[in-house]
Image 1 (cartoon, rainbow, N blue to C red):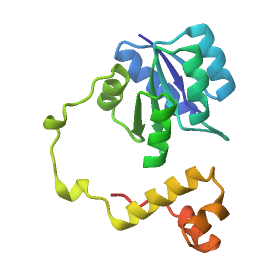
Image 2: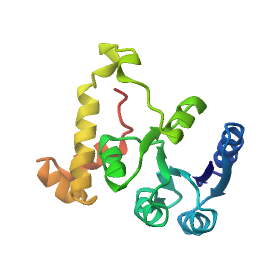
Image 3: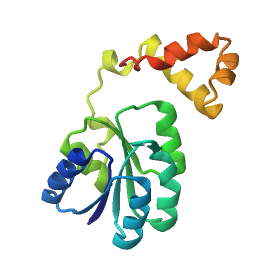
Image 4: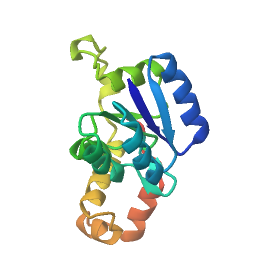
Length: 177
């Protein structure tokens, strides 16, 4: 199994490569979008671990070019800033899975190998499955912002909200559950 790790944090990329090598992957690393495409063309990985934020680039923009080069590789998007909008967009563009940082090695290996837990095996706790109203609001704002291609003014108009109020809400970190 050949794995391309596309991660701009060099220390994290090295740590992931060491851990995933122990799990049977032959790992190559790229730290920016340009090198990622070059390595993908030469290394021809069967699996790709892609960080969503690469310095000033967005990993989502790499999904389509990577899919053109490697249509059958298993692509997992890894992000520290998860939202429903980006998860949907990643899957629409061709990602096989979407994980949030920090992630444990077992979850990462399962995602890379395409192994998902059966829904009936997952513990169900209603207290942890219901999102707070603040989190729902943040998710909705992210979806509307995405549909307006990041235009804050258009998003504020659509949400019937003052632009500065929206900017303050966007600066806050997302509320957990």
